[in-house]
Image (cartoon, rainbow, N blue to C red):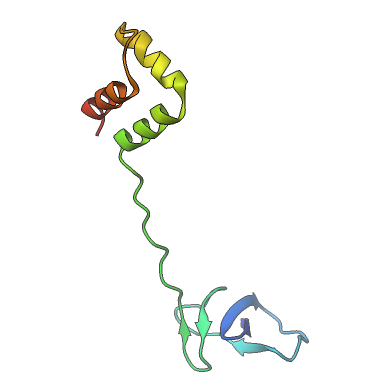
Length: 102
């Protein structure tokens, strides 16, 4: 297997090399362990995997509910129907949601 590199990054992997632009360089990766993949760095000697993507923690359900309530008056209307309270305010509905959701 051969890795096609450009500016220190693997951009393609092929079984057979072919002519490419002079700025691209083929590197034999046969027997390289672990096997490099597209996106890995190459410094001329060592292949390096990219860092793992950051872990994204979704906001708590209560935060999502508050955003939805504040963006759409339909949620306020539904809250008034569900509670039977025609004077329920947006802030009161958010407080109810926060009391019930994690």
